Amino acid sequence: MTTTAPALNPQIVGQAENAHKPILARVLAPTGTTKNQWVALTMTATAGGAIETDQLAGQIAGALKIHQVVARDTIAELVAAGRSAPGSMRSSRRPTPTSRPRTWPPRPAC
Image (cartoon, rainbow, N blue to C red):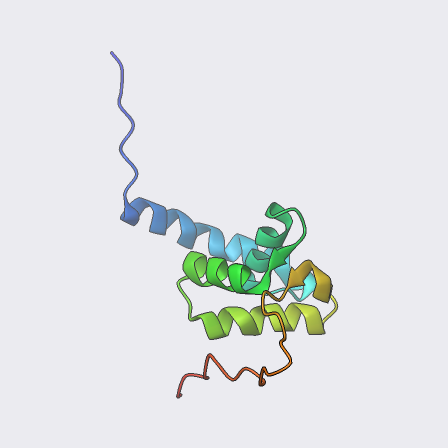
C-alpha cells in the first residue's frame, strides 16, 4: 500500500516558516545580522554577488512581504555596517546633468 504525501498549501508553508524562525534567530544572533539582512545577503549572493539596488529591494519586499522602504533601509544598514560593499548592490539610477536628488519613495507615516 502506498501513501500519498499531502499537497503543500499556504498553511503548511507558514507553519514550516514559523518553526524555523527561532532557529534562524539563534544562528544569526552572534553575528548581529537581522533576518531581513540575511535575506538581502542571500539574494545578493544568489545573484552572483552583484545586483541592482532597485531589483534587490523589490525582491526583499516581495519575499518578506514588507514595504520597499523597509527593504531599502535593510540594504542601507548592510552597506553602513560594512557587511556589503556599496558596489555589490548597484544603483540603477543614472545621474543626468539636470537630475535632482530623488526623494521617492516617501517614508510611511507612523
